Length: 226
Image (cartoon, rainbow, N blue to C red; front, side, top):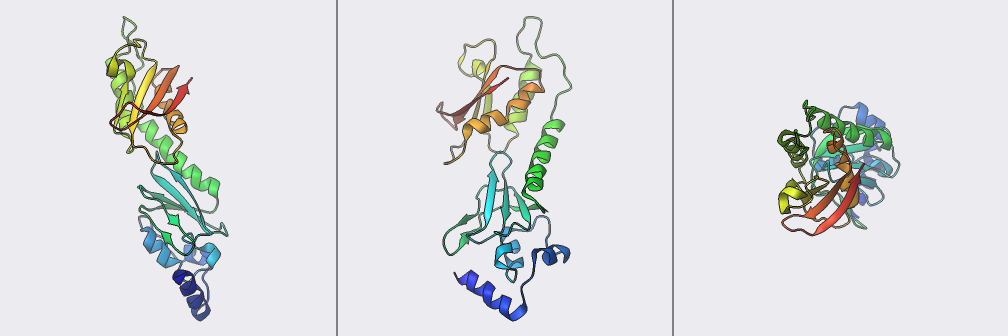
């Protein structure tokens, strides 16, 4: 409430800034913090401020990125390295962490910027090895290591391994286990599906991805990669 009253008072004294004027003034900077961005909007119209309880947000846990926007949806701000998201109550918001990565005029553009970054990361880690199995039909060590290293490079993943190598059985390598923290409200089935392209680019199909709670064998979610 204090923040909202402060915005209204300053707006009356100084005149409200628009999102367009803030963007064109060059005040937005890559790597600025959420608190710095919040201060930038202290004299903006209430509907433009992405740090009020009427604002919106989306979080992408795999990429550790968060999109924020004001209720008027004039601009969409993408934050990177986010482990604690914005949380708004009736009168104030806890900003969480992360730094500004980019800003966009539509939500679709903001989402696309995250997908583009993810695709770029995946493409740079593709293997040039075309042979996925050895003469006995067993999955080659180089292909296995490439898959494991690619998945373990994700910040949320604490460990990744083929189920056969972890506990035996399943010699055809049709199940893959990924360990990560359990976070309330996350769709771990969707997260499992997210990793399917890693197997596809390495010439594998028919893989079941099982997300395990870090340090345990408790299953958080599953996905089938065709």
